Length: 169
Image (cartoon, rainbow, N blue to C red; front, side, top):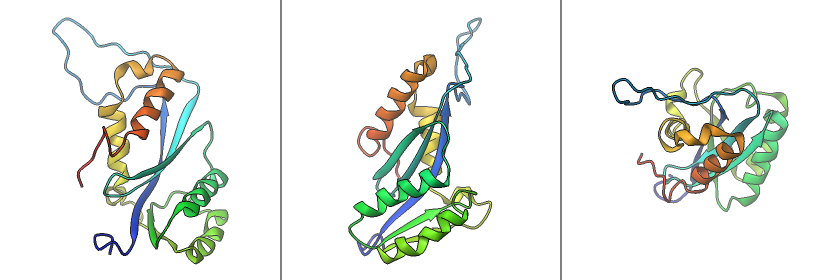
């Protein structure tokens, strides 16, 4: 139905970014170490809805992300939709909260349908690939030198998904 243009299909999730770098693997010269600073403190929470065509609707929050901020985000998303839209979400406690569930019918009346994945199946949520790419490939090491730098680099990447940063599904 998405391919035929009948609906818009979005995959949604949240991810956390902080000053502890994500380094799964890196090459280094023999006898030289790659050192990255790690610091606790402020964090960024990003919530996003993404299509298979790399259209990304997102917001960043400093500090706590909860059911109220999730509902506010979804309300903004629903307000900008133009046709029947399906949003696929995982089973996080925020998505299963009473407050969030209470809004599902209101969104449905505006042609935005919420579909929950089976429990313990994050591999079915395509936006997980976006978070992995951002953390392990697209954010450079120097982004972790300061919180402001991380915020700027992350914002740049998020604003350029589908342009400079692309995922082929």
